Image (tube, rainbow over all chains, first blue to last red; front, side, top):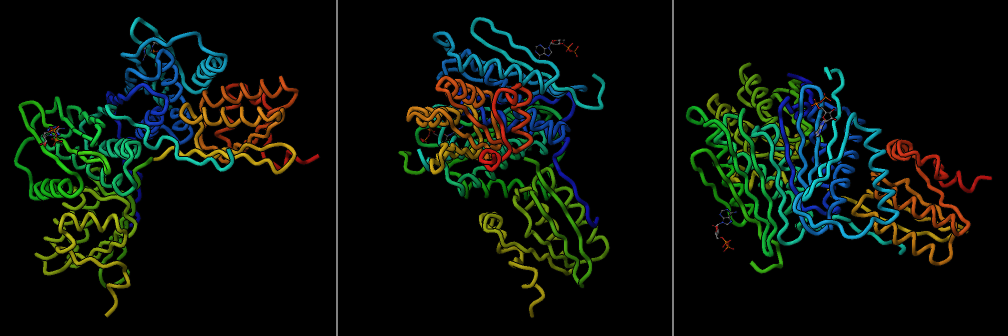
Length: 147
Length: 147
Length: 113
Length: 113
Ligand SMILES: Nc1ncnc2c1ncn2[C@@H]1O[C@H](COP(=O)(O)OP(=O)(O)O)[C@@H](O)[C@H]1O
Ligand SMILES: Nc1ncnc2c1ncn2[C@@H]1O[C@H](COP(=O)(O)OP(=O)(O)O)[C@@H](O)[C@H]1O
């Protein structure tokens, strides 16, 4: 019993586990999504570098979903699903009024940057836009598992 | 512009904002609920002592909801709603198999302790049990607001 | 972000000391329960529980402590709890357990005459 | 748990230094944009952006930096970025922006001949 050390809660998510966070679709709350992403990633067995990657990537996922929003209405629904081989994350914007006007140069830059960040940090990602909602998703393989 | 210091994100929740966290109904994931509770409480304008109180109280709320669970099935749905006068939090257990057998002495102690903790830390709280689900709720008034 | 939890038993003095560091909650309390059981199964009726490094405690943890206290007293011993953090002390106070457990603020306070 | 963000402008040397501490993301980037605009509106074409205290940076923050860089260069100046943290540097690298911005590891490296 002496010196029985462990990080409790590490790797406590199991295959099939699903965690969902729903919050008002505003940029100032994306920090919540990143917070939950860190906690989930640690519990899915990712190491500290991957955890930082996932925190950043989830923030970008939210930003991609938020682009259809007027930053005042609707919710973001962030979903984490742990499969045998990967952590699948999606972010859906629902109930938001369509964004008015063309994006400015800075927003276009940021959009392109989000895609570059996801390209570098996750294994697959995509974005679907249908009337009424925007959905951005990504997949990060778990090392040492069948993919 | 010099020395422009601020805690960004503090008090960024508005009246009517609703945040929801859904996660597998297992004790080892209650830490997720506490994490989100801290972040939400800080953003609802509660001070550091109240934030610690709310973190503890939300954990107890989850434990009260979990008691109907066999700790293997179902989800906990934790909901935060900010009103003009209070932060309302509820935790609902759904889809869990009913808990088998009578609770042991330690579990009965812990249940009573949860109630005592909520009595001390929040302004109102309660628990409803219906067939198929358990719902525990609490309300914490925001200081300096009409109640 | 991690939930840190560490438990250590020191039996160098006369009374065994179980020291916990981190968060004791529904996820980690079972390990504390097991450790206390193991110590008492050796015949120790009096145990010191050092919570100086504990940053969080929930009702499950308190339930384990109450169970261990009952067992110590049944064996004619005592469960001494060491707490100094105001937040942790508050949890004992709001549950009335500060009147049930012999609580001291430091390990030194136990060996003092 | 809090999202810490602090921005400070020091104009004691020849080139103004804007120093940021904390997380620059979609919530806080607007304040950085405004600060950089204010400095440039005074006619400063070259600015040093000290990110040594930055713990997180997202695409919105990078977008603000790219916008400020364009503006500095239009004015015939430069936006020097100071980064030493490997995580922050990684974000510049994966977006290719390490080749766009003049990045140095310390403020000393800027004044060195
Ligand atoms: N969360 C998701 N949402 C939408 N499309 C996805 C998602 N995850 C993966 N996809 C797309 O569906 C394709 C097939 O998915 P699937 O058969 O589950 O994965 P795999 O890539 O392992 O074969 C993927 O390659 C990807 O392009
Ligand atoms: N989240 C909740 N879920 C279930 N019942 C609640 C909840 N919040 C409050 N209650 C109960 O309903 C009563 C009336 O609620 P309400 O009119 O909204 O609040 P107030 O206490 O401010 O009058 C409360 O006093 C409480 O007993």
